Image 1 (tube, rainbow, N blue to C red):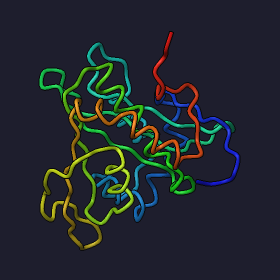
Image 2 (spheres, helix red, strand yellow; image 1 turned 90 degrees about the vertical axis):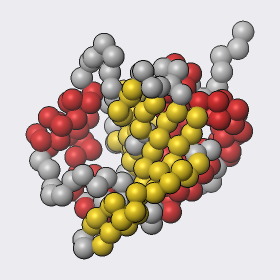
Image 3 (cartoon, one colour; image 1 turned 45 degrees about the horizontal axis):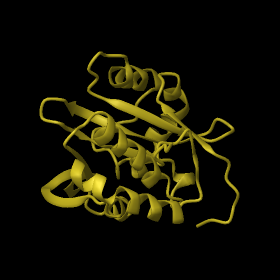
Length: 206
């Protein structure tokens, strides 16, 4: 854990205006290729706004829920959410991304706790799936801490700069999250020098 004092981080729904501030994350291909295999060329801010607008615009039964972590000075630190939400089958995909300057401080795990609570305690989904590149050791560690299980691979399904890597499929069931939630939060709290405002980590008690 860092000894550096960190002010609370605002955790709120992602807005279309936020896209301008996070656009530069998508211009570093070496980095973003660890998390996203769908961007073959740099994308303009306008194109990103149009693309993301479909995910964050209001819908009665939205297929996506996205959130952003922002520092007190307004600096965006990371995003996470649920995509491809299927309310009939009860499943969704959880992507997340942390800016390079703010990694290794527990933010990915902290964001995921809130997203998993949304998925299983509010939306009442049955399972959450996520995918990552086989050589992305940091994501592998974060998912293991959260209780995800590796469920399989798409062999050589991730292509970047002439090299193919496997795509790892990881998942967690609602009952698994509920059973391990308190322990995960305790582990994340000990290894994380961050605090969300507002936070849904702790249960409200009378």
